[in-house]
Image 1: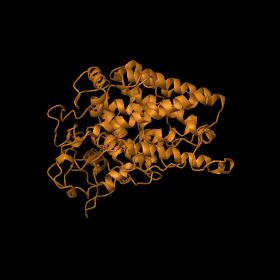
Image 2: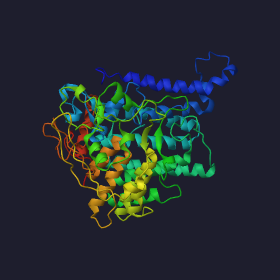
Image 3: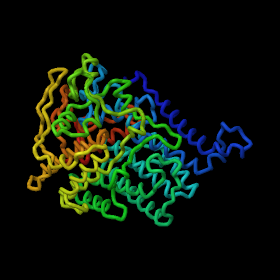
Length: 535
C-alpha cells in the first residue's frame, strides 16, 4: 500500500547509488594503478570510460517510467494510479480515503498527481549534467541521445498535465516557465529531428561505434537502434496531433517511416528496460499487485480478452484464485468496503525480475498499428491499412510468445464480452461490437476503432500511452467508472482527460502555474481537454 509519507530524498539516494555502482564496475580492475582509497572515486576515476558523462544515463533511463524507487511508491502514483487504471488495463482495489481517490476521480487526495512531475524534472537534472559534460567530452552524439530520452520522458508528462516547462529548461531556474502544449510539441519535433540527424551523421562516419555501450540499459549503445527508436517516437507524436494539426501530423509521420532507418519493424527493436551493466532494475508493477495488493485486472481487459478468446490472456494475467473461476476483472471506480473481497481476482502476470518482466517503453506492434492508422488516412506508410493492421497483430503475438495469429486475424464473429461482476452488483454490457477481422468495406471510424482496439491490446501494460490514445481517439470503448467523485468536473461517459497541475508547483511557482492554466484554456481539473484532444 502507499506509504503515509512521501520521501523524495529516497529517490535521489537511489540515483546516487546507481551512479556509484557504475563507478565500481568501471574502475575495479584499475584500483591497483591508483595510490588512493579505492572506495572513493577521484576526478581521474570519473574520466575513465566516459563515466562522468555516461554515468548519468542509467538513472535517467530508470526514471522514464519510474523504477528507481524500489518500494514502488513513485511508480504507483505516477503511472499505476493514473494511466494504468484510466486506460482500462487495470483496476485499483485499495481503500485509500474511503475509496475517494484517483480511481473514483477525486484527483486532489494525497497530492498523488505531483509525483509524475517531480520524477520527470529530476530526469532533467541528469539531462543538464549530460549537456555540460557532452561539451567537455566533445560528444554531440551523447547529448543527442539525452535529447531523445528527454522527449521520451516529457511527452508523457505533457500528456498528463498539458502545458509544462520546456523551452527555458537549462536557462537559469530549471523548469520555472511553462509553455503551451502546442509549443512543447513543436519543440519536441525540432529537438527530435536535430538529434536524429546528429546520430545519423555519427553512424555514417563511424558505423558500429558504441561509445556509450557501458551505460545504455536499452540498446547497449547501438546508435542505429536509437535512430529507429527516435523515428518511432516521432511517429507516435505525429499521430497525436492528427485532430489539431493534420497536415503537420502527416508530414512528420511520413518522414519518420520513409527514411533509410525507418521505425521499429521487429520485436528485436522493442525498447524494454531491464537489469544490466551492474544496475538492478525491478518491475514496480509486481510490488503494486503482489506486496501492496492494490491492483487487479480491469473489467475492460476481461471484456476484450475473453470476448476474443485472446491467447494473450494467460500471458498478461494470472487466473482467479477462486476454484472454478478462470479470469476475473474489476470495474474501476468501485467503492471498496472490503479489500479482501477483491484480492483473489486476476492480477497482472508480472514478476519482480525485470529480465523476465522488463518494463516496456515501446514495441514494434505499436508502430504497425500507427502506420495502419496513417494508411487508413491516406498517408504513405509503406503498406495498406489492412496489411499493417494484420502485421501488428502478428508482431504482438510473436512478442508475447503465443501462437494462433492467423486464426485470430481471420475471426470475423467474436466481439467483446459482457462483464459479469462476481464480487458485487457492477455488471455491465459490452459497449461495442467491434470484431477482429479487417473489413475493407467498413466506414473509416469502424476500422479506426478496430486498429486502436488491437493497439491497446498489444501495448499492455504501458497504461500511460494507452490512456493517451483512448483520449485522442475515443477507442477502445472502455467501461466508465462506477463512482464519480469529481463534483461534476469530469463527465463519466467522456471519462478523465488530464490530471491537475501539481500542488507543490501551485505553492512554489504560483505565477507560472496561473499562466499555465490560461494556456490550458480551461479550468485546472480532470475534465479539461488537452491541446491535441480535439476529436
